[in-house]
Amino acid sequence: MMNEKEKLKLFETFRKESIDLLEESKVNKETFLTNNLTFLDKLNLKPFTTINTLNEALYNYHYYNLSAKKSNLEAQKVIHNAKKKKIYVKCINQRENFYHLKDMATLRLLEILEYKNIDSYYIILKSNRLKGEIFEIHIKNMDKAILHSKSKLILENLKTHGVFIEEERQSLIDSYVNKTY
Image 1 (cartoon, rainbow, N blue to C red):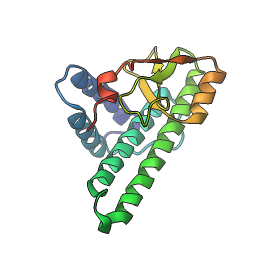
Image 2 (cartoon, rainbow, N blue to C red):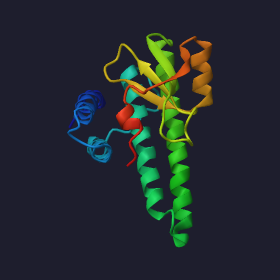
Image 3 (cartoon, rainbow, N blue to C red):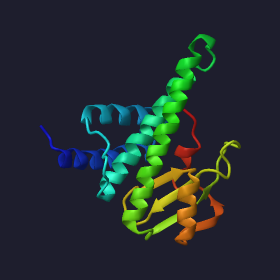
Image 4 (cartoon, rainbow, N blue to C red):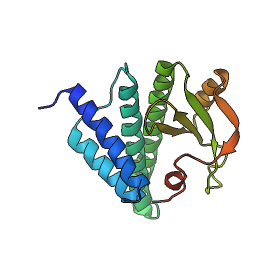
C-alpha cells in the first residue's frame, strides 16, 4: 500500500503524462477529464487540509478543479428536467464550492512561490459570458503548471505583487480552455 508521498509522486507523473496526451491530440478534452477523474478515484488521495509544498497545492488545485467540472457535467444532464431542479441546484452549489477550494489552493501555491516566476493575464475566450473574467497564471519554473481563475482576491494579490499584466493574451493551453465538452 502506497503512502501519501508515493501517491503524490504518482499523481505528478500521471498529470504530466495526461497533459502530454492532450497536447498531442491523442485524447480529447472529455476523455482527458474522464481519465483524470478515474485516476484520482483509484489513487484514493484526499486533498491536503494543510498545504506545505507546491506539489500538494497543485494536487489540491487539480482535485478541486476536476471535482467542479464533474459537478457541472452532472448539472448539465438535468438542467432541462423540471423534476430534478433540486439535483441541479445541488450540483451547481457543489461546483461553486469546489471552485472556491481550488482558488484557496491557488492562493496557497502563490504564497509558497512568493509570487515569483509567474506570468498572469486575462485570456482570450470564445465565451462572451466569461470574457474579461478568467485569467491565467503560468508558473514558469514548474513543468506544465498553468492555472486559471476568476477570483477577485487572487487577481488583486497578483496585481499587488506586480505579476499581473493588464492585457488579454491567448492562453498557453488555448485549445483546451476554448473547447467545450
